[in-house]
Length: 196
Image (tube, rainbow, N blue to C red; front, side, top):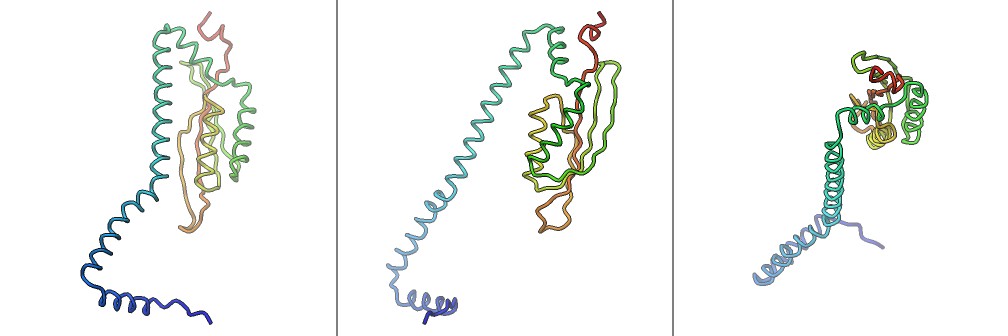
């Protein structure tokens, strides 16, 4: 027959053993406990520290790449920089395809996507269309973050303007989020862009 664990009995046995132990034995035991504790802590946290170091290395590489890109752009004329800017914009005639990319990304990220709100704006000074997209989504934080990263990577002319989160209860993993994206689109041929 197996005995069940009794914490009171265990504490009593520990107290009796400590009462019988000599001072030298107690000092030895305490030295071992306090000597092993830092090593145990280091072993447990070593993986987390290594991961943080990898993240820092990745950020430094990205920063270096961005710096090199900035240096490369510094050597361009104003007209070349403006041309690069307009080439980065999306094409207004493909806006439906961009929406398909967003909806597909939500599905791949595991999000439930409700019907959104869409609004066009045109800036006459820059000849750029802004397609604002407000999307209510439902999912966990990791899924929402993955979706936002996917949109910004696959559509480099998109910006994430706003994120609002709401949770029905503290124990609920699912979040209700409202995401606001803007797609910056060019609807004008390059020959008309500079007034030629």
